[in-house]
Length: 635
Ligand code: NAI
Image 1 (cartoon, rainbow, N blue to C red):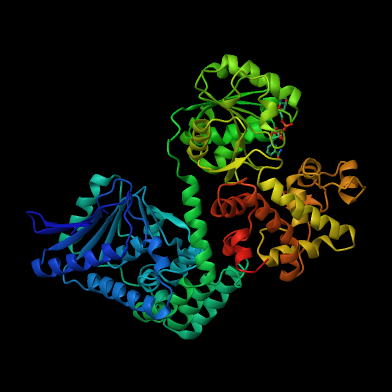
Image 2 (image 1 turned 45 degrees about the horizontal axis):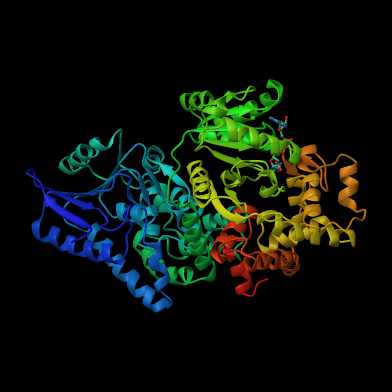
């Protein structure tokens, strides 16, 4: 066997260890499953007292099925046959005559959790993460996990886990019944597993409530509730998998066995659906974006400009483990940023020591003392060439020779900012989006002179702060603003011609956008939108409702009033049901512009463009991005 090893120790306990031969993490591909079959034969023949299944990887147990293999299937019958084999394998594991224990450290997701649930017991280190992320790929568990998770955790907890795709830390997973034991450290796993086997602990009896699920009317009632809940989060026309899972539960959820049989029946249609294909493509493209050749080595970041952007970039980097100095003209200008950072740390880190650590990594630095030590300097001062140019000339003199020099400009050409620098090849753009904490994309802007190694380092930095770096050529609007502007201004034209804001927004949402173009303008800030449009030559110089609102100081969400009134960060309006066809018309200029950007080489390839626009604008993920949507004929 190449991936598994099996041995029996002096006490007669069997140890089955998965260490995928050609990957950094364990996944359950066809080769690994075929070998598991072999391992089970060996276990059946040698009859150890019990079997402990663990991972040979330091990073985790099993990350899931091998998603790359999914694309090999194009036919429901062929896929169903393959599922039947996997189910037979897990059933054999479950019915081995000796107790089996999954000893889990790190992540145990999807197929990995399904394998663990087929064991007699499960123990995990307390930092382990368990969950069923399948719905995020447009499917539900397919290796028997639907029935087995409901059997262990009860319908409510298990269905919630599968419908949301949420991760559970080990203590929470234990509370819902997925784990028998939680231990502090990996070295305790073996002892806990051994005790379970030798003590022959009986598995908890299913509470009465679980047994009620055998009654069809009760399942029907629950299914109805689940559908209502799920509909508030996902549109069944766009994301059918969670709804198909609820149908499966209602029709087959009487016992674990019947639900598993139903799973084999219904899984293939989901996996071969267009939604699942698109979501898998999104997953692969996002993984590709994250991959950087040379991880960023430095730990010190200096940010100049503590406004909306600079302040939030500094906070996010401190949260991500960087030592950050934050400079502005006065201490007063920095204070609001520190306050916002505090809320971010509290919200995301929760525990006091972690919050204190993050706070200690972020320092106000009016004098700019951090410049000489920094490994990377990000400039986020006002959008004025006459401020940025001399700043970079000075930075070039003061900074370490190998420090990365980056600007967060959203509209000034890098070539202009770099004018006057001795070595313009050092300057790179790192274009964050507002709000920084929520938007995963950062455009890495390549100026005419920017050196390739500088670009690669910038990508490394962005990946190190857990954002997705997208390489973009320096051109007005870069990628995201350039494709958004004609979409927003197209909607504005319709508004001027008498369309209602709510109808336009509802149409875009019906198409599959997270929010409509009018609400988006309000969120971005109406002044910012106008500036982008002017930069791109989209503003026709005539008076319109946008300019009138700006003139009245109504700038959108940030001022409490724009096209909509805003309260506590929410637009005060109710959307009617939307017209998806109108939505497609609204999105057409965006997709046209994406095609132009690809033709002009603004982004390297169609896959990067699609994922960039999904992460940068929220463009319908179930369509796989704007170019894929066009190929599908949707827009
Ligand atoms: P802002 O006006 O909120 O903040 C700018 C800050 O820079 C102010 O606190 C100001 O006191 C400070 N500053 C000005 N001159 C300085 C100097 N010489 N030294 C130190 N600090 C100085 O502006 P915002 O919105 O944060 O924008 C900053 C940059 O980020 C601009 O280049 C903008 O184009 C870009 N950007 C803005 C986005 C947005 O949505 N607001 C999105 C992406 C990029």
